[in-house]
Length: 395
View 1 (cartoon, rainbow, N blue to C red):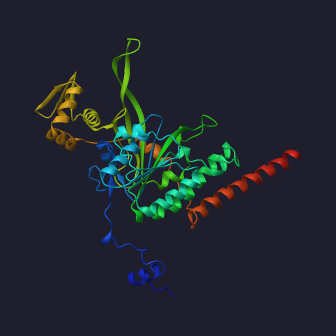
View 2 (view 1 turned 90 degrees about the vertical axis):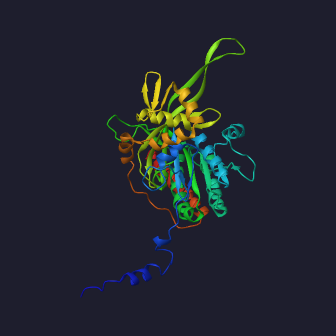
View 3 (view 1 turned 60 degrees about the vertical axis):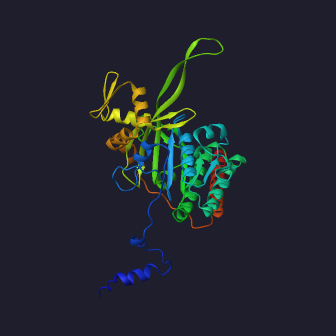
């Protein structure tokens, strides 16, 4: 005898028996809100969720990871996002795991360091920081920054209970446990949780071993829980001629760096788009120069020798003249932004396909219990391994 087929009403009643909010009413869905990054180009790379190429930013209620090599602008990116939050009237929370927060540089980027408008916290270890994140969600700030994943060291490592080799495994497990718990509360709190991360070389046992040559630290969990992953790769450093006030000799001084920004994962809008972005030292993003470079690369601004042409009316000599024109003429600046075409990065597609694996979900427990259980279980297993190895060597 065939089972009776449930009606939609019966199914709804059964599913929502334990939790009436389990089935979402899509007619009452909340509109996705964004935090501008401070870079018009990066906002456009991420998108606004409409799949139309319109600029968005960091999605609230989601996890975002920005990673790259040294001096690629990760901290500047985070500070710039905090500045945008302040301009929106919100409160950014900055968790300085690296213990290297530079207030003078933050002020130069444009941040207001008043404690009521910007809060810097320096957690002692991973577990301490995780509990702070959990408690901070109750305040519902716009943005929580964790700088950086590589500096989120487990308590057991700092207290000498485990060594460096064991630290990597425990850190990855703690990250998985924290994200599986935290992700359940981000949407209700409408908070963007931003992680900065560093690249590490992957040591391969042989030349035949497959996989990427470099990897971001912290394990696999952050890759899968992140709704947006932004990769920053340092490209060129621009320098100007200067004369030393001490020796009188002529030299060169760096003024900005160009980085290649690539959205390698995007659950909000279209992924795999990349573009050049300029960061001025001591100032932050140079939006005009970034847009100019993208326009030149996509032939929106045509370059013939030193002359740059846009449309039928704009023709100037040199990037400096074009920069001044765009800075002073808001109409042409708006026309240029509307004319831009973003480019997809095929290499980013190939790289990300290597990370398409399932993530094991964490335990349903209080934050402290989750991390403590993970750490104690890890240490017990490592101790058992040592005992077995000692017995084997004795035999």
